Length: 288
Ligand SMILES: [Ca+2]
Image 1 (cartoon, rainbow, N blue to C red):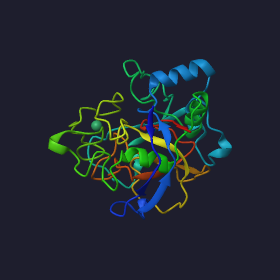
Image 2: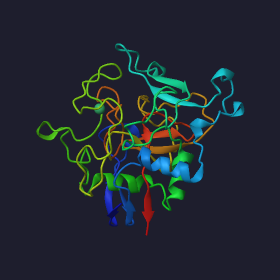
Image 3: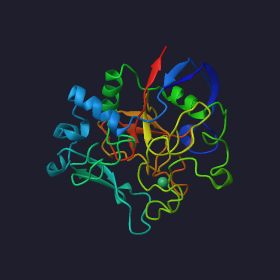
Image 4: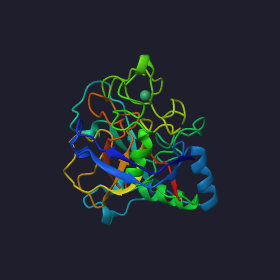
């Protein structure tokens, strides 16, 4: 873990999406934070030790999903599927597929494995799974303010965690999506899906993957429903919400400038706590 000292910073941004506004001064206490998102290997140790069954490995309760097709009420998770060509960006079902049998061990569905991806961030974890891991590890989930302060790495008001230029001297600084989402991935950063943690340079606090790769759960509730931009490319929200939302931060490998420029420290989305996907993970903090 890395230590982040106490301080004040400008949280949020007035320059991008509505849900980030307004930029305001926020103070945080000092804390320790994981240098990397929790990996598949780390999550596997937790599961071996506790027998924890993740949300996506349990069948959804019909009472929580009124009107749902009973055949879909089986263990599963949301998996991203690249489209063959341009699609209507207003309809996220064009690229998110509810996939029975998808879970943290089978990120693309029952036939897939995490073999060779032990150092990738764990995915398909709902909020309760992240919280259970944190408790097992003797840690906590970061607040949104802690997460954003840490992500900024001492660069107050910078657009990205490394500065204001997306690719300084042509160098890719994070695993995002280059090209036209959700069909054309130019792979300038070499990864179509998740990447091993620590592939790209750390920020000023020695933290890796604070932008892109996977979204990360925070402990904050996401208030104002309807206050966010209508571009849920990176965080699908069911129409019939029976569960409240928490804030996720950092953007993911699916964030592309044409639709979801959210690989920035100020960026945020609300994610219903029952949601697990192939691009949401987490990291932990320890408060002093
Ligand atoms: Ca990428």
